[in-house]
Length: 242
Image 1 (cartoon, rainbow, N blue to C red):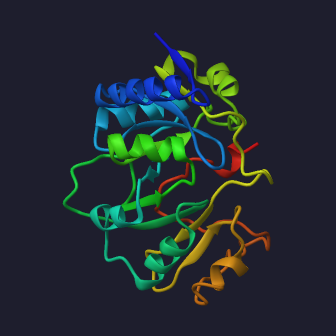
Image 2: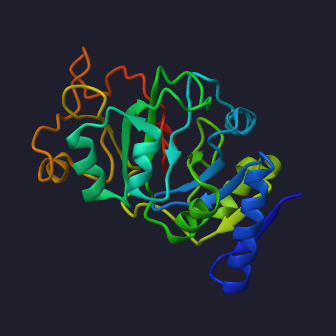
């Protein structure tokens, strides 16, 4: 059974967060708002829950989901060999529309898919989702849509695509980054950070904090394109954003 909660109403918001927490604990999926688009979320530490999320999206293990976290300090528990540049970017732009690809802690017993030892982390700038993350811990999240279709900017759009794949829908009203862009992705696993997808945050904004950030590298045909990267996909992958 699927339930939707209007989080503009304090009573429904409280009830919805509690229902979402129970669903996550039961290894089920929920839909939540982020500061860009709506996402479908599952317990990042449950292989069963992550597999359910990927199935709902129509994705394979070759497109692992990123992980949303409730606070900057959580990075240290999930990522290894964090560079000073990665920390500076997180402290400057989180919560916000920046996804950082890091080396995953090898001791963690999770299975997000074929990540090649990396994890993509983001702290979203959305109070509803941050409150849920505080209750559940890190969540694997991808955009709330079937792969190849437009990302959902409202709960109604998410329900139309995912229906019973999620048991709880948290309605935070229309959600998009305003300019139609998703989060900017930076790969921080190398010697210097590299943008692998341009989004809401510009190269200039990132360089104001970390001058060493590289822009997107041109593809062999001369067109800008993300380089081949082992890191996971993000909640608002480029082909899916509105």
